[in-house]
Length: 286
Image (tube, rainbow, N blue to C red; front, top):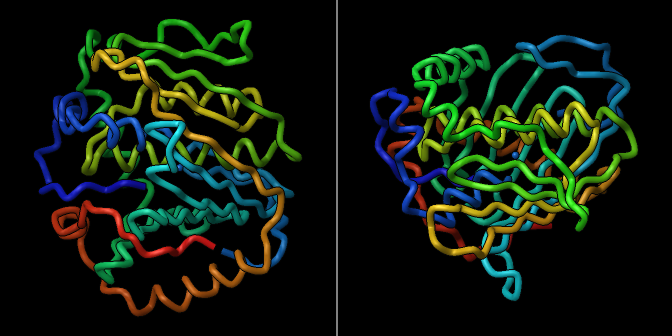
């Protein structure tokens, strides 16, 4: 996920609605997007209001984001779902987010800067709920679709608010738990980017995630248009679902488990204050 180089701001609902909004590609790019080695069979457990259903297969979703569909992607991620943990590699910026439902924590890592921070899910949830409670009814209405997603004649569903429009296509996965796992991880990613830099408006994307969870479907393509920009060209995310992990995937997970012990632990404030914003040219995608 993108994490901008931005000093920690005072926790305020206005930041959610205004910060970084001139950075169109950055805003839309994030809004579009996001460990055990063997097959995991878990019991159904509740983690902060979310269900981890078993049995679950291990699978991967690759996401390519385009600002121009005639050019190469501007951002790529690989997200691996591993039962009680989900780990996403931001291959463009060499960063990582790990959501661990077992110990109820979120870990962020900046691989280029050799540092990481970890915080409890409950803390993130409390900060997000506080932020949401500070929104006025007008602000909530501005960033929320008044109606559920509806499918058009072209096969795209649509969710729209005053400021932006999502259009997306879906597919039924091999197992319903895959759709639930994707939506749950996307929720945590959205919350993390709402309360931390770059402070992205979360409400419409949370509605999209809720639709995917309720319908038990995965997105194949998500098109997001900023209706305030005067540019009708959307940012496009294309997702490729791999129903199982490869040997390379397992190697990458093992590499991370070795690497994590070498990274410096820092506070959230320090992590976001020092996070570098520029992408790397190093090829790390496998």
